[in-house]
Amino acid sequence: MSMSEPRLRTLLRQAEKAKSAGKRAAAAQLYREIVDEAPEVAEAWLGLGEVTHDEAERQHAFEQALALEPGNAVAQAAVAGEPLPQAVVTADEEMERETAVAAAKPLAQLYVEASSPAQVEEDHLLYCYRHPERETSLRCYNCNRPICINCANKTPVGYICPECRHNLEEKFFTASTVDYVLAIVVSFILSLLAGFVVVRFGGGFLWVLIVLFVAGAVGGFVAKITNRVIGGRRGRYIPHLVAAMVILGVVIPALPLLVGILLGGVGALFGLLVPGIYAFVASSSAFYWMR
Ligand SMILES: [Zn+2]
Ligand SMILES: [Zn+2]
Image: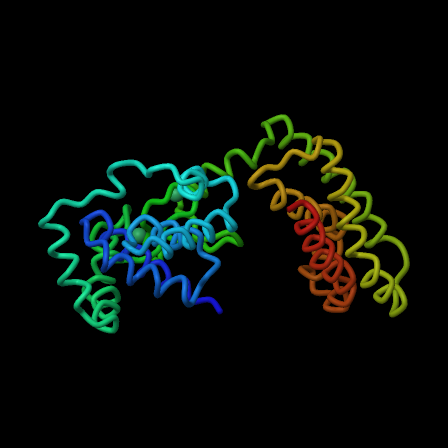
């Protein structure tokens, strides 16, 4: 059986505090509670071994820790019967007196102390580094600074702050100015060819269907060729520019139709149906292929 992550952390922290304050019995109680419920936590076994006064329990705890973490030097030394570092095993008389008081407290009371709201609040009272007046419990996974919910961007591996996100994006976007120019030129030429075919050839219902089915593939084709020409490098605005070129590539050959509508030929509106569908589907497709 395992305990919840926040409760485990609270108990471990509390036990750590008790241990470093020399309250060995209190620390031992907390470590026992952890290993009862979560025997897979090597840290708790190690802690128990360090603080317990019971020799058999001490031996057992270090053996458990060693079984969980065979490379742990402290556990290795303890199981081999070597003395532990001084700081771990000694506690002065006054501290031992506190230990006696803590040991007399019922376990339930210790747990209440460990997880009282005031304690939790103290540990979670962080302020966004960009908004010092906003409390938060989130941290950036990259720089570990506290960030408020408005600044945090959710990623598959955790929250990231705007600064780190920008820095990561800068590393990600490696396209040069030449790449931008190449992307515009190549996608424009290809899109213009495709646009002429869409506007000039065919017509009627069947043509609407054909365009509807191939427009996505045409947009993807323009994007793939463009991507290859610029060596696969990415630019923040390249997908937008390529999508714009796909639209421009069909708008230019469709200009006579637009002029026709302006001159009053409403019948020409129908002629814009196919270029319109093509522009929408192909540009969306090109945009997503480039991303
Ligand atoms: Zn950050
Ligand atoms: Zn903020």
